[in-house]
Amino acid sequence: MNYLVTGGSGFIGSHLVEQLLKKGHSVINIDNFDNFYSYQIKIKNTLESIGENSNFEFSDKENDIQNLISISRSDNYTLYYQDIRDKKGLEEIFRNHKIDLIIHLAALAGVRPSIERPLEYEEVNIRGTMNLWELCKDFNIKKFVCASSSSVYGNNEKIPFAETDNVDNPISPYAATKKCGEILGHVYHDLYKVDMIQLRFFTVYGPRQRPDLAIHKFTKLISDGKEIPFYGDGTTARDYTYIDDIIDGITKSIIYLEQNSDVYEIINLGESQVINLNEMLSTIENTLGKSAIRKNLPMQPGDVQKTNADITKAKILIGYKPDTNFQNGIKKFVEWFLRK
Image 1 (cartoon, helix red, strand yellow):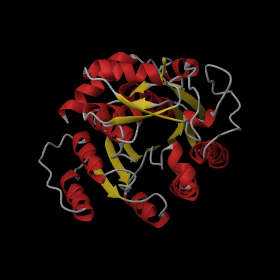
Image 2: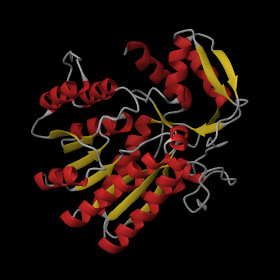
Image 3: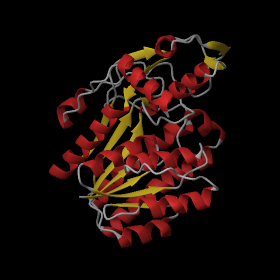
Image 4: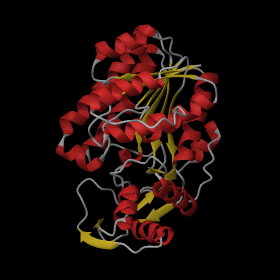
């Protein structure tokens, strides 16, 4: 099969590309190497995902990305340095490849940054996604997996969160863009018969995790003996989901789409194991064998109090079965962090 993966050089995307290639599929990776975090991390992700162990020599961004494209191109893998906001650039890619299914992971991520840059989040997460759906319509591509987010639930009072819960009250621009993506996705399913699964990811962690996310940030700061920013009283809680379980959920969603027609589904992918901030920090401390230096700070705007996924639908519909508990997941993450 020929899969197009947007954001295929990022945290989740690079793991998905690696898995698809191992299964013998062809992958077209679209990534714009955004400055949200160091492009060098994404280059390393890309090299790992394609099994390339060469010692990459970094110089400057444009040359480095072009060198990466040259190194990585093969019969079953093509990397494009492309922004999803550029519809003409995307159109050229669609024209040059036969695409069986799209897995759309590219986005501007992060709750707090979205409050500072809401219009940019709208451009990327809404307009960029619509560009892809317009091209699905134009090129008759009928299968689409889209990354949504647990953030759409806001401060949902019902626990655990189910796909049937009302999500009309997002508390950040990021969450609102993801809710818009779900709604607009249904439009393209209804009008143009694009079979679609929208996956609500719950706090994904593991090797290659973005450096701005709490587990990675805390691990680095504790390891370096520096203060960690600790927001609130430590009772905020998240349904942490290990990367291997997320990739399992994505690949099973792909199989479901390939085997079924007239599909529009929203599915939670979580761990159903809720860990509060105090527990998360102590688990990292115990795994590293070092104590954290806390800098206590107030809760941040846009942060939700708790997330907890009801994964009943995922289990029944696609056979999703997460099997990495939080303690083992942190152990694997710290092992990766210490050797990278």
